[in-house]
Amino acid sequence: MKCFLAAMAFFAMTAFGADIAGTWKGTAETENGTLERTFVFKVEGDKLTGETTSSMLGKSTIENGKVDGDKISFTINAKFQDNDMKLEYKGEVKENEMVLKVEVPNGGPSVEYKAKKIS
Image 1 (cartoon, rainbow, N blue to C red):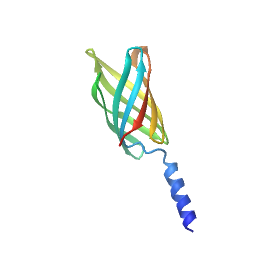
Image 2: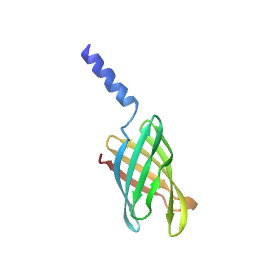
Image 3: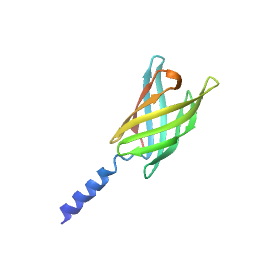
Image 4: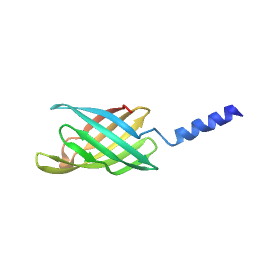
């Protein structure tokens, strides 16, 4: 009976996907060098909220966030050189690592962050 309960608990935990809530540190390699970004995620059901910070773009609030198993998506509004832009993030989480692809508006180059959970 104990084995059955343990197996049920394991399957229940994996059915809900990865544990996304918490603080993640990410880096992206670009033509202009390495970008660093910190993500602080909060999850309530399938809703993803929180904030993200980088030295280049400052702090931004996570908006339109969704969690679907191990996949996440969200947007942020950022300002770069007096230009407002909406960045769209889509990614996948595997245990304590995630890969996030960032689409830049107006056909700019996309960026891929690799992040690790730190808390």
